[in-house]
Image (cartoon, rainbow, N blue to C red):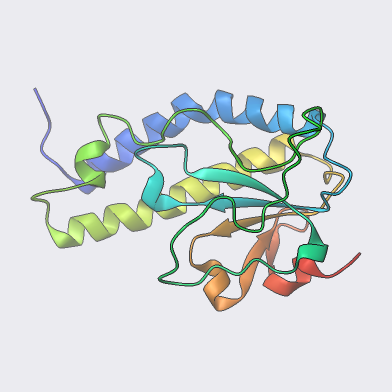
Length: 187
């Protein structure tokens, strides 16, 4: 028997999904910590792309070189995971290029009716969207803080889609919002 759509049901489904993905996310973060960065990589971006959560895991890792300049993303721009991302295919022993943190989408069958709704109330959709955004961000940041105890060899930041339009990102080492350009300042 299917339960009727409600915000409370959505919260339960999302909590269950995040719980199921918690161990794989932490394993991916541990592997990241143990993989050497390419010598040219001096900045890591972790980007939360809510709109793709039904097809892929919505947090993407991009390797950057500050010398390439800031990589602003603005509203209305088409998403391209390769944009301003440094990748060296000739040196696979190093971490470079774009990659999802996990190989499966975050949205599962229980969440799908809320994610691409046909007949849900607009207020319910908005509440679910806001909760998704807040819950996934808090879950990722909590896992990061617990697994990546010490800063990586390069600064890293978390970007929630649209954040850079207001000029801020979340510095993962300092665990606080900072101006976007602070992350691109040379150390």
